[in-house]
Length: 303
Image (cartoon, rainbow, N blue to C red):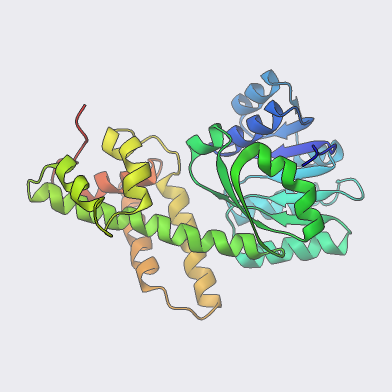
């Protein structure tokens, strides 16, 4: 596919956004960035990106503006605010939000963009921060065919797997389904491995058994050996953000009149962990939070 000639703006250089923006710049796309933290902005400047002091300044310098922000409040402010993207983006521009938000927010953004003749894409991200660092993210994209074609070079720069889920709003809804499973699996794994530790079982042997049956899962097999089971609880995806996503999931399910009792219970487990100071740890650290409650030593892989 041919490279986009659009000037690109990127707002939100957090743990995921910084890696994604870096991948765009490494593909030589002209890029202007903004974040409230100066460190990530400086790192992108070293890669050749320009910096801007506000969302409005990014929009004024760009044809396509990407947002990767913590939640609905920040997304709405950056895109719909008086000094936000929509009030300042060039005619014929496009906004692509990659944040995890509720469907109501995405639908409102899509409608506001359509009213002004601005393209809109929701493209929330799958996989983890280290995938973003390597340009190997997965994207769940909601967009018209034309807008999808326009942003495809950017998605290809940031990721290795791209799913066009349908029209605007389908990306966000798919992401909530995905994160529901990913987050509750962390709680299930935490409970299972804390029980294994309480039984005095060998962790390596327990994992060997689990990975040989249908009990295994992606968190346990792919993420956890590189994170909490290796003693690394620095946030790739923080417990605070996982709790936020669970809140969005429960809210969206209530709106759709779908009962999700496991999501509600898991949210309370994450609330408990946050209340005990675990909020800024990786969501795999729910294992350590669970072991703390049980008064047992968290299991770790040898070596």
